[in-house]
Structures are given as C-alpha cells and as structure tokens.
Image 1 (tube, rainbow, N blue to C red):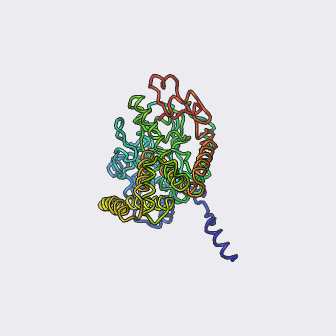
Image 2: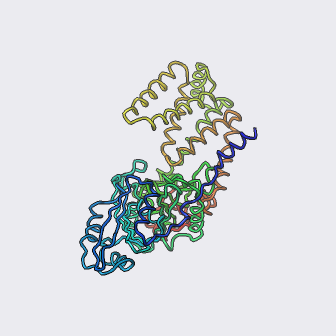
Image 3: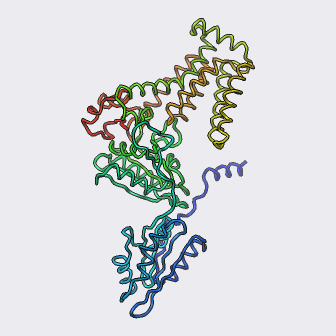
Length: 509
C-alpha cells in the first residue's frame, strides 16, 4: 500500500530536472572548440549546418564559421547579407576582436543582429532562425536575423468571422503577429517585451501593452506569474492558462481572454489590457477578461447601436436558455406538471408514457449522446463529417422518437439548448458543464434545486476576479459609466468621449 501511495505521489509530483538554461557556457577564442561544443550539444544533428569561410588577412589566414539550422533561414538573405559579403571582402588587416567589430559594423548588411557571449544563448538563437557567426580569436559571436521558414498565410480566422471589418487573423510565427499589431497601433507607447518559456521547447513569448493605459500592478503581477511557470514544453497558448488565470484550472469561467483577431487585440490594448503572444500558435491571450465580454463581438462596433444591443440581448437570453431550460423542463415534468399549459401537458404526458425512461434520464442521456456526436464531428476528417450529421439527424433524431426510445419534447428541448450554446462559443465548455449541473439539481430537488443552483451561480460569478478587477463587472459592482458598453451599446460619439482604461472596468472590444 505504501508503494502504491508513493508511486501516485511521484506521478503527480515528478522529480524536477535541472534547468540547463541556467548553466552558461562562455564562448572560447578557439573557434574549433566552439564548433565541437555545439556539435556535442546537438549530437551531430543532421539539420545543424556549419559553413567554414577562410579569410585572407595581411598576417595570415583566419577562420570564420556561419552556423544555421536547416529549414529555418532564408537562404537568399543568408547569401546576400552574410556569406557573400564575408567572402568578397578584401584588404582585411584586422583579426580577433577587431575583425569581429569590422564584421558587425561594415561587412554584415542585415540590420537585425546582436552580440552573444554564451553558447547556450547562441544555440537558442540559431534554433529561432538566426544565423550565428563565429570568428577565430574572438570570445563572442554574432547572431544575425535571417529567418525564412514557411508558415501559413494570413487569413480570416474561422472561429471569429465578422460581416464587416478586417479579414486578417493571427498566424503561427510570433514576429508576424507582432507586425500586425504594430501596423494597427502606430504609436511609440506600444511596447513589446519578449521572454523564453519551456525548459525543453525554449518557446518565445511576447508581452504586449500600451504604456500609459496599462495598470502597473496588473503588469507586474502577470510578469511574476509567467516567471514562475515550470513548463518543459510550450506548444500552445492554452498551456499558460493554469499559470496566469486567477483561479488556475479550478474555475468554470476563464478569466483570461482568447482571440485570433489583431483588431480585437488592438482594441484590448487601448483599454489597458495586456496581450500575450506565444510563438507557434495563432491564438493570443489577454488579461484582464470579464464575463460580459463573452457576449460581445467585433461586429457590435461596426453595426448601428440599436442592432448591436439587440444582438447582445439575444446572446444573454441564449446563455440562460442553454443552462436553465433542460433543468426547468425536468423540474416541471417530474415535480410540478401543473406549470405546463394544458395542451403542452397533454403532449408531454403522452411522450413520457410511451418511453421506457423517466424525463430526468431522457434529458441526461440525450445530452451525453449529443456531446458524443459533437466530439465525433470535431475529430473525424471533413470527408466523413457529413456522415455524422446524417446519422444524428435521421437515426438518433427521427428514428429514436418513432421507435419510442425518446420523447419528442425532450429531443426539442435538448436541440434548442444546444443551438443556444453555439451563440456563445467562448463559453461552450462552461455552458455544457452548467447544463448538466442544473439537470442533476432539477432531478433531485425540482424547481427549488434549479433556483438554488442559480443563486449559487450568481454568487460564484460575483466572487470571481481577474487580476483584481471584479469578473462580473460592471454589473457587480454596478458602474453606470461602464454600462454604456455592456448589454446596451451606446453610439460611438458617446463611447469616444473618454479614453477607456482597465480601471474603468469597460468591456469595449
């Protein structure tokens, strides 16, 4: 028993491996020693490319090495900016450190370069698409930015399509995403700070904020949480949610926002939010994130205010319908059938009498069946996706009702709640979990269980915060100034009267 407990503890708390990034390896003046160290670090990996260039000096020959990773650099830029200028340069009278300064100031034509004195940092830059230059007799190296790896072209994100506005969406390379933000916010107040996370992956991330609008306390808190991340690999922005979310993984509602649209990210920056860009993923994070933002889209600010307000009201109604309707139906059918209108009561009673399950079992079972269908539709190849739709619509829907396996009212209730949950895609996971909780409460305690669960939900939302900002703001605590852009959207002439900051607890996108 003791061994079992020890193995469980070891599984959930694995031993920490030493952090190799903290160990510095100074660059030697002997170029062959540096090359040998790099080859040992990469274990002579086939994609490590080393090109030796011999320079003829007045006092003899000296060796220079250009080191790159295959597939991460633009070969044309590498040739025109580094190898050709070095090979064709004549009348060199310097060596060692003086030659290094000459290369940096006169020979290398690329503007993106930096000095490196640590081989670990040198190898990390090479794996990021830089070309490294080593010179015999110099105890430092030069890293030149010649990135040229292939990536997906900029296109409209499928998850946040709009009727009006930009058709651009973030892509995987971090530098491209930074340029899309900079192109929209042409101000020197916009600042980018980069850092590296992941002991094995060494993934670059970028913190983006607008000086003068951001809260210093929130910025310092975010940086402290990022520095405490203990990740070996970082392949998606979702890896960071457990570390930067106020409640970690133990929350139904995320307090960290996610977007794939550069214009939405820029709007958040203007409000004083902080954007986190992770290299290799098109989804960027931003903090703080409020509950009411889930009911807003970029189209709300390109359409007229009255139409945007109606759309937001529809989303709010759909949210409550998606989480409450199945539970209310179970409570009425099981405990309080007198609440049904007479004609509807007759239909429900006939449907229940011809099915082998209770209403509670029917709703719960069909909810799980739908989640299985949804998961299958997401994971199957697109060519087989139509088969899932046909099976769901004909077999599970019409055939199940005609065979008496499930009642038609139950099928309609579950289908309606599913459609309503699609209107708020950012909250789908939360809605799915809440729907099941309300069904369980209704099956156990009837309408009183639904009412109690609803009170618990409101209390839970009111108690949450996102980096010190109340999550349910501006509804709780109530802020009349910020209500101009919450459920009802005011006109742009009203919204633009004052610059919006995080302290205003506004939710403008």
